[in-house]
Length: 451
Image (cartoon, rainbow, N blue to C red; front, side, top):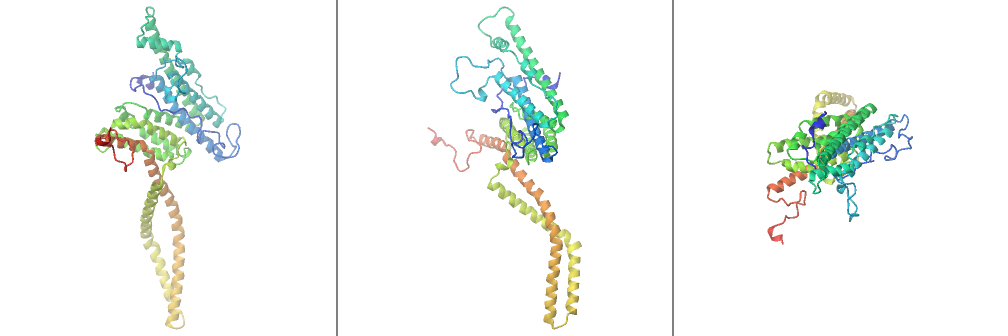
């Protein structure tokens, strides 16, 4: 039996997943040329020998595979922890308002996950255009416990007042357990089939599928004691996958998520050691899923981290780049002064001196000749040195600017981590009702303000 089966449902509580549905499109998830405004494409989304079109299709496959891995992990966790005994439609007439995502029954929620898996597989098969048949969730749908069996199992667990025939209730409960186990096995078989098919289609697509699945398991809702275990070395593997997929992920997304993941791992380590300046494991566990949803949106192109920056962030980036440019200019001047500038200046002064001495006329005329020669020589030296220096500075300044932008974007993406720290500070100061991230210009409630 695989590790995922041995783990069982008792290690994670039965809590609701994030209130969002499976993404069927997105910035990078659609057909090439439609979401990016490019030219028309053929029926499988390719543009012949166009390298840009192929890269765009690969990006779409990678983003879709990442979502596919995320939803596969959510589907397995939902099958482990959700109550599949409730009927698909509530008895007692229509609801007062339209049913929301979080109000779905466990069976409908599972169907939603399976629909998202089928849609993602169809999109990947269309974008790759290899002609191979993609896996299907039909076997998982067939293995879903029947509604009658689920209801009988629920009556057994709840201890229904109507006494069934002798031996019927235990048999119904055992049947329900067996059908749930069969459902989990079918999901794991589908996971293996998808992984095998994705790796054979494109190794990057398979790697993106593994990345989405691992991220979903890392940010799963759970107890505070489970948080250190999830960051026990897993972030290193995820960071390595992000490096491998950086060229086909949205701009800045891999570097930003990698830095944010490192910040969370450091925060978990400090919280576990009892650092009073860090948020506790309880606060981190509450915000971890929100952080995971933001990571997923950044990696799939739904959220560009640069959109989170404001004027203050750009001012900080400009200041830091100017400071670093000044330091680099000073170091470069020191490096080229003796081996380059000093010999050129010695030759220049020698030529100017000889020219002034050989010039005919009064001393004023000789001084004018010397000044003109000195100016022309300094101009030539500046042109000789400044051209390559400015070209090198431009090449060096670009990664410096991108590095500073990455730092600021990662801080903005780490909003849930900042909320966890704010909640911990409010708790330690005796204000548990203070809203994290509230305005610093608004005073908190005092006893006199209360009714």
